[in-house]
Length: 292
Image 1 (spheres, rainbow, N blue to C red):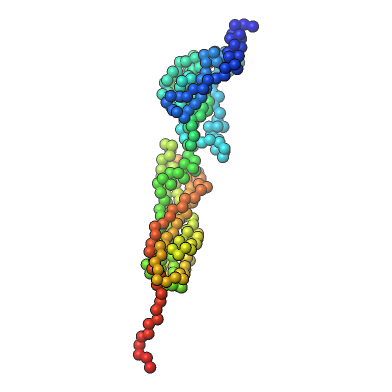
Image 2 (image 1 turned 30 degrees about the vertical axis):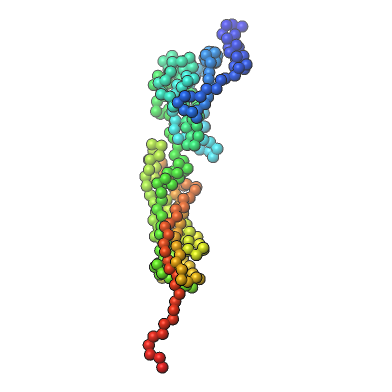
């Protein structure tokens, strides 16, 4: 057995016996990984020399680009040196010349690790690639994916228009009388910036929930219309009272990134409308004219 093989065997035995020791990056309390010993670096370097492949790129492209329901979606990507004290929030130039980084076929290149930050999780290591001392070029960095969830969250932050329930008669109606309800909806369009990309958003009113103030409500797919239409009407049974009426509008939305194909957002957004006072009165018969 030659000397290099004996060193590899000893290193493997050391790892099996003691295992990798956990390390937490000081600049990000949510990031954890495994420290790599100098012996492990030596064994890894020897393995690359033996198989003749060197270290080019072992990035899991499926994990980076997959849009499946169970695949993570990354909002940020960063290239950082593979040196064991370099975490995903380290400066790009930190420790580029450690033993781990000098395992590329081209002596002028260094080994870099790609990190991805999900929208709702911790940084994850996605793979490595050889590049110059300044790191891989921008073309080698995946683009963050704008997802329906990100657009929906931004729509909720911006806020969609609320609607006011209008009635005929206005402000005051009669008991046992068909009171007409309607609203004046409008579509919502806006261009926003998400993850550094231009995103066009469209939202359309899809349904309306009418609150009549007497404990009853109905849901319609139309906004109603003024008289003579009677698309949405309600009859009150209790007189001499004032109720608070309102309408909630539920929007469906879609978006496109950089003038690409439109994508539907599966979830809807419901916006409650402001309340309005409506007085319920009782009609009283009044005689007029001369009586015989």
